Length: 404
Ligand SMILES: NC(=O)c1ccc[n+]([C@@H]2O[C@H](COP(=O)([O-])OP(=O)(O)OC[C@H]3O[C@@H](n4cnc5c(N)ncnc54)[C@H](O)[C@@H]3O)[C@@H](O)[C@H]2O)c1
Image 1 (tube, protein in one colour):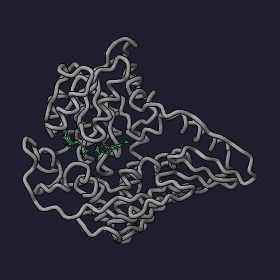
Image 2 (cartoon, rainbow, N blue to C red):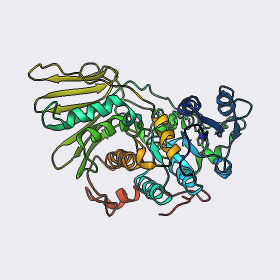
Image 3 (spheres, rainbow, N blue to C red):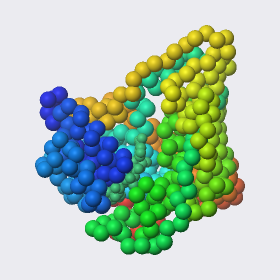
Image 4 (cartoon, helix red, strand yellow):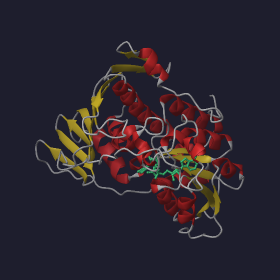
């Protein structure tokens, strides 16, 4: 698809109509001259529930197999709001089918997939936007500009806070999947495993076969802001410490995690405590904090607050513009360079999450990753295992459609 006039309708499809996918459906439908023409989910109850809320209800096509969405030549773009383990397989297939792609964070379930996605986006010359929406907010564009201009002097450390109470999930027995659900396709590339309620909607986040823990879930948002604010990409080393101190249930992913991303001239700290909701740095539960030689900035739910040592008041303001509308504007002109949250940036932030998780899972290691060779070069003697975790074994019939 080339350039489109402002009046032409972009036909969009949402794949995955759960908590976030229902938000996608409503938000894309609200963009002028964008129609949510198709929806896809493996859970028929969710699918029909979201379809019934759309302004074009009765006309919107519904599918349980994303490949049928991709077969539809009239669809221009898709957004992917499935569980993490399905993001890249669907995104790659969509690019190969000629669609523009909005992919939820983290864009990939492992480092190899993130790298493939960047390559495929460039090869097929399509817009691929990442669901780290702060990149589209004028508030955060103003924050990054102020940091570059030295509003708090030279910044040597950014801290990402993820302090929130996530209740234990208990232990759920094997049971039958809900009626009408194609659970085998839900598992897709992941290993075969009996259905349990915990391995299903939302709680899949806490199982390595489908999710990426809370580092890849909530952590990635402010990790992306920290990296953007500091103007850095891949770290030279990743120092990991994490465990399950709080949970004694079906959780596989840590409840406590501290990761230090070391760069030539600064560092990013990721601090995660899922057993408390007391805020820090002014009461924030999820935030990016920048520490400079002349002050600090807290970017969290309460807004962006600048505290200079000399007490000079500085305010940073701006809006929270839609990442979805930003994507559709780029799709309309067929120009990936117009994206605010391009996959080239999203992939790096996703890789940082994966490296932090690999180092934590393999015994809290000091890890080094070579982004050119796409290999882990150091991981406390466990390099072979670490490199295996850069990818996964895809279940037969669910191999990646694009090899790079
Ligand atoms: N950007 C944000 O602020 C934000 C916020 C919340 C969630 N998310 C992301 O959105 C994604 C979905 O999260 P959620 O909380 O909505 O999870 P969820 O479990 O509520 O929803 C996922 C949906 O995808 C469906 N699904 C799974 N595999 C599918 C497939 N192959 N084809 C079609 N449908 C499939 C499931 O049936 C389910 O309805 C996650 O990757 C999450 O990280 C992003």
